[in-house]
Image (cartoon, rainbow, N blue to C red; front, side, top):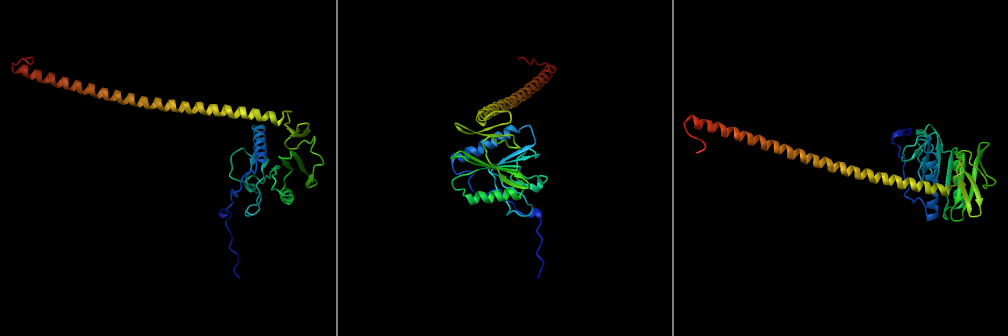
Length: 256
């Protein structure tokens, strides 16, 4: 029997998409986007990478071991864009916190499978949110495995410092400084609007600079053509003067 041919790790393909939509309904989509944006904004000045709906490959050389959490957080990882989260390229750092915003199609068995995956590959906190029912549940690592949090009401995430609170109007989440997520939405929206305004102004500035450069080039061209015309006129004048001098030398008045 021939020995199995070794595969170059560099040649292994790690897909970046499964072709499935990020969310099945508006509630699920809004929840994913809200938590991704707010956590990313909150940790903007720290080495904390927040990803959304991205493939996480925990094991090098085995692209079949993969999952795409709705939102996941990695402390100690640089904040640059990635196509997928390949753990062996990230100093072996596994996502510490994971969120799943479940839809009607997510069966209990599906969530059990995800819980087992996150438990196996080192997730410290795993939170499940049902946006249509507005219901939270969660798990935290204790004694080497993920254990269900007895009650989410009043629970504070050890890693994120986010507090979950059940109030009259439903579940609320609060950042460590006490600001509710609802207020953060307005702050982020304002920031995005300002960024859009700055980008629009910069675009107008670039157009104005381009027009300036175009007109400056035309002005230089006109000046250059004027200088050439002046030079030719001077040459013609000099030649006329030379011919007039020759006529005078012959006793002829060049003016007649």
